Image (cartoon, rainbow, N blue to C red):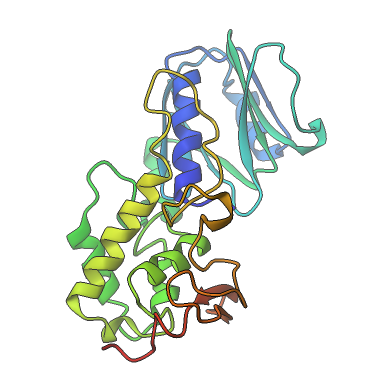
Length: 279
């Protein structure tokens, strides 16, 4: 499922393929985008920048036009050479951006809207994001302050709050808490300073580790399955996520799962390594 690392890699690949290029083709299945394109065509504009902000991907075009997309659970961007056959059915296409050399296709992307720089500043879902875990200048102090503001809430829920920290999704939530020995059902107010620091530094470390590939000149669209354990064994790539009933990789206790928060998201933890009561 797309989390901050997925969006970061997608933005990087799109930037490598499209930045500085002139749009020669624009298609969309969304009437709202088509209406904007009819009034102010995307074709002919230059793609100036592609960036990720948490789970949002922003494509900046010349003439003050910004395309914001959110993949939610199943969306994805694919990049093809001009004339190359798509690997997904056209019925799944939501957006197509073409240049002389590449075609970028958004499949099953459920949220896509055009903004200007000014209207994007007023779009709360983007403008109100907390510090981006994968941002070049991650503001750990600000992130810690935002966490503390939610002292009465459960840690697992707050880590998913994009207004507190941008980029963490359900997989990393459980993995970060396990790595720090923090029970995800504890309140933020119960955290010791070192535990708070661990959550933030581990979030940064884990997400960075999952975007490390692709630093060269090649266009990298996929870097393999997400890993948090550091193990090269594909069967041991995650600590607790989706491992309910399996033995903890550290102590052997059975991993538990419980639904958490208003979103009823699955949370995984080890009851021995992540005791409810802080030591």
